[in-house]
Length: 433
Image 1: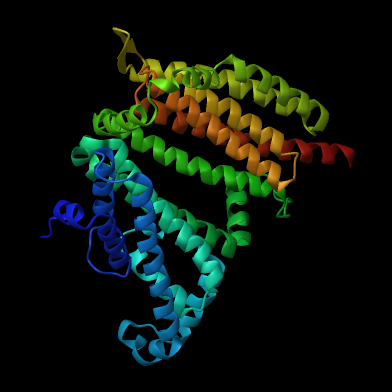
Image 2: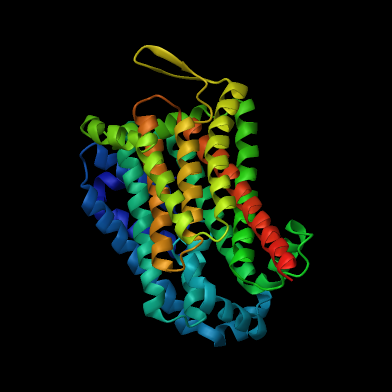
């Protein structure tokens, strides 16, 4: 087995670029491990962070280009001649080509986190004749993100990397697989959306038989239902891990990364971030949403009622959950905190911000505004969670549980709101007739 530390000591940046290049070309080299060791050397001052990323990124770019052009040159004649050996003929190639033209590019950015996929996707893009400019944008950016992330993780973890690298790698693989599954889910949704929408709505609104359009209401209900399924699955997994006391390594790794990445100089900014999880943000946001509903809402009374119910019910929910799980939190300033699971700050933040954004955007069709608001909600929730870990008032698992339980609460109420809204509209139509 090769001694990576000795090779890094001897050949430095050139070794990083060569190892990344060969690994993406499908040689059995541990690229993730190599990049993380490089980050460790950056931490120790033996290598430069920027030059390390530049070298690894250059190696990735070379291999990404080579794999594409090899596939491009071999192309269809190679598949016609040898494809039958792996059950890949002209018909299958045509279907793969059509699929790659529509959705393959979306896999390029996350392919580097999925074992096996990063070694073959470049060849397939070349074989299917994906335009190189389109391929390069996503493949190069994904490769640069991959090398930057692992080198930066090694730099942040420093001497703790040996103890944590297996855990971090596992989370990265889970992230990659989850992203791939999400991409496939979007693909199947777009392909079968009429059938899926009709089936889901029949299950959710059995009494609304005459609503046959594929408009905004159906999309909102379907999206909320899909998110509800995801959050409920995560919630059940977190409860199982909580009962099995399996959060210790996750809490240790995440806390170390956050405290290393955000040093004492971040103290004042973290205090500002922490205030985002208080009435300083909730108050103006709830008032703004209420005014928006009064001016733009079609079912004003119902929407205002649900806004109040979601906010008040969310507070009662997090109090009940923390009393139920009764978890001892971290010791802050010599005081042992209690009942920290799930985090009241992140649960309330995602509840208030998420549901307010849902009500605001329901009456706004501009995609740019919707994207901005969506990213703003994610950013605020992340900043609130990071501040709780930074000040050691809650464990990272407490913060994550707040996101998950809050997500279940708002998606469930979004579905109920849309169902009741449609039933109310139907009753109004019947009375008018």
